[in-house]
Length: 269
Image 1 (cartoon, rainbow, N blue to C red):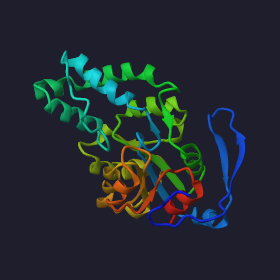
Image 2: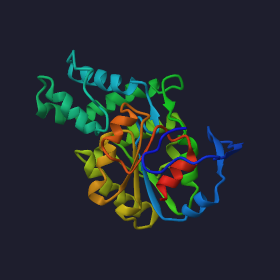
Image 3: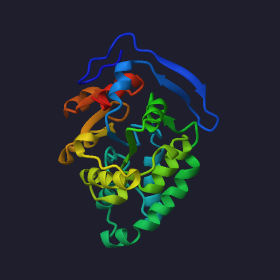
Image 4: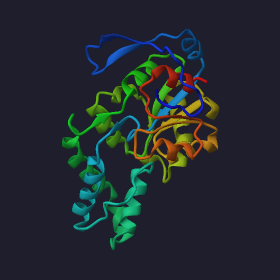
């Protein structure tokens, strides 16, 4: 049984498999516990990170990001050791430029060209054998999407087109009507306030930070919502281990999100 940081897992949980949807890739699930269903009447804004949380690209996105930089600037030898985890793509771009002799002004002027080249190269690589949906994500996203008391969105370092390409590749893009993206700020802590504003615009519902849950797999996902008072739900399906994430004191911590009922209890607690 997987560990959870704040709420003890319960015995005898049953998730009943229903039928396959005609236009969706994943089976539907029903929540079987009355307590969980009752708690799901609370208003919640749930914001998902993408890489390491919803899906993994097994290093493909990172490799093609670097290849696109080398091609765009005709510069060989950009480091492959740089840590991308929990960062905005625009931030990663700036940090990688700083490791080279490329003129920062030239890099800023050519940033749009770089991202266009990156996505052109990445798109054909996002195939079923190279991209993997993290455990529990399809049923969790679908359950939240179908809950009228809940609005779901993205809080990710990806640029909008990058997020769309990755999530379309696994059939999940249509679940997310809005997002706070790498183009919406310079550092991750700037994104939660953007997400709150966009959630209100899209849903017509005003959410507070206390009604917001940020789901992610890195320390930056845990800490970015502190300023608005959001709850953090960390998951060890990315680069960071359960123990490493636990040291950053998330409100909730799971080894994976596959136990849907326990995750829902954490979200609506």
